[in-house]
Amino acid sequence: MTYTLGQMSGANNSNLPAGNTYEDSAYTRYLKEILNVQNENAYMEREDRYDEYVNVLVNDHTLPDVLVVSDRETLNVLVENDMVEDLTEVYANCTSPRIKAMYNSYGPQLLGAGTFDGKLMALPEAVIDHGPCLLWMRKDWMDQLGLAEPETLEEAMDIIQVFQENRMGAEEGEDPVGLVCDTNFVSTTSQNYSVEPVFEKFYSYPRRWIKDKDGEIVYGSLTEETRSAVAYLRELYERGILDQNFALRAQNNLRDLVVEGKCGAFFGLWWAPNNPLMDVAENDPEADWEPYYLTAEYQEKDNVYASFRDNKYVVVRKGYEHPEIVMKIISVLFDYSRFEDEENADEINSYFALNVDPTARPLVINVDYNEAIYNVTKDIRRVMSGKQKASNLSALEKSYYDACMKYLSGKHVTVEDWAAYKSRISAVGVLVDGHYSSVRRTYLVDSDGEIPNMLASLEKNAFIQMIMGEQPMDYFDTFVEEWYDQGGRELTEKIREENS
Image (cartoon, rainbow, N blue to C red):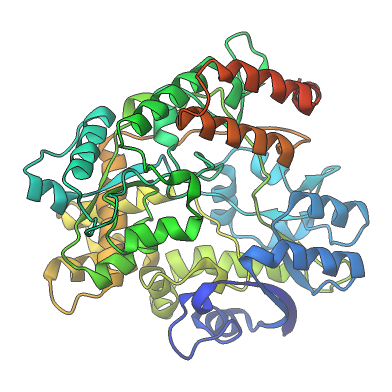
């Protein structure tokens, strides 16, 4: 059976192996073998333009049979205009018990995000907890300078200052680059190059809605804790630790600084070895990037709200006669191939160790337990230490275990093997050893809490000016006043009313 699909494409053909396509890959071949279904991609658009393209399909009422929506407002339009199927029954009858358990691990609010008037109209992505940002640092530079590894955030900043003083990574005529920093400072998804841990050190949560000590919902960028964090970043800038040109850098430029060996430190998630460090490993095998978890004592409190603003949702066109295939595809990709099929799923599970991008999947979502990342690492470590047999690993875990063991053997090692070990064992390992535990999110209801562009720009510019010394720290009060006066007061009242 063939179904039409709106496909989100990724860079470099989603890193698929040579000869594979979005309609002929390990994913599609496996689904055809197990379910006898085949996607026919009616539409295809890259990630950065995908939402815009989906809006055209919605406005023209030309939906494919199956579509992933990554914009909550568009999802609301689809439901309000009766353009998508009710998936309540097919979720109950055609989804495996393990998939249901995965959704249940997030609490009722996750499936609730796709539920309208008691009906499941869209299947949301299960956004696995990726944990806090780690500080990735050039260990080979530390060794070269005779520096001990950092145990605190302050020690790490001192090391970066020594990197600067010794002009590490800088050629003649160039200024050395300090701690790389994105001008957004934090991201709702904690992406690479943010400085989120600096804010965490002060229990500050900018760009997030939080509940204050009086139980009132407030915008986290306006708190005294945030003022303290900005003042600390200002101090880092004055000391030359924070990249002196951070305000001028574009996102792709930040990646280039790392890949070209111009900087020795950036904050990033556990998967940073896959991007950008895999390119570093290929170009400069001597560059030893190590992860450090320096904010364990400042772990996020339970007063911070999350939203479903950035979630992806799978929807089925109204009137399509086989809506159940969505639940069957998800059950096969995220349950059967990983936990049940030991004979035929090797190719599909090898994609994980090969760093094939999730956009290669026919349904560009992920479904797993909330703490899946940490459980995978714990299981692999138990096998590596002889406490568990490799035969007890799931197929997904086995693919990572094989790559890690190949890396440790030192024979015919690929950069993908290096990335698998550095991410799964080194990076997630420091979170496990640091006793990180996933935070159970409290989600905003009825509203995604998105900040209008005008207020977001006001915040960004105010922070940059204070950090660079163009405005005194007293300007923080002016920023807060202006934020409220330019629409923030009404927005805050709306969020409070909707979540009272």
